[in-house]
Length: 106
Image (cartoon, rainbow, N blue to C red; front, side, top):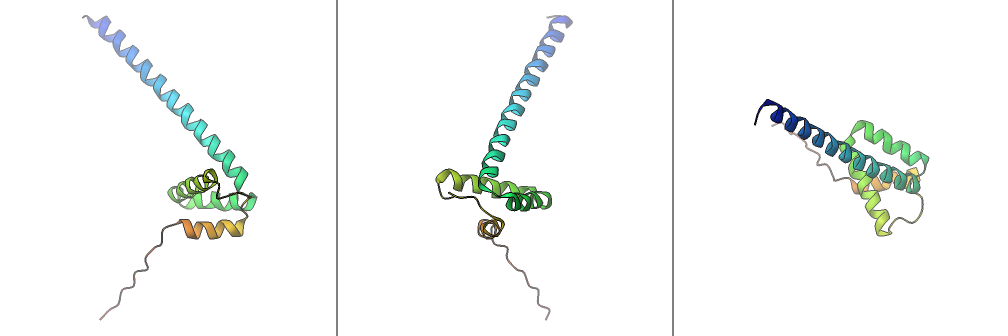
């Protein structure tokens, strides 16, 4: 094995890695497009706007809410479009409860 063989193998390995990354990015984009299409179908404009504001404030919570909404839709539990008032109720029910911590001074 001389330097040319090593160089050729490294270039080939880098090309394979970049090809795998491109395929992963394509799959992620496809999944994201499907999620957006489903959310567009089940949420009205005001509810989508509220979800976008939640995403700006806390992306992890928005992702969790999106996944739960899609899961409910796929199970058939959501049959009509959700308006903003219903969306607020759903968000309150879907998000885990936060414990209020009170500190008392003695």
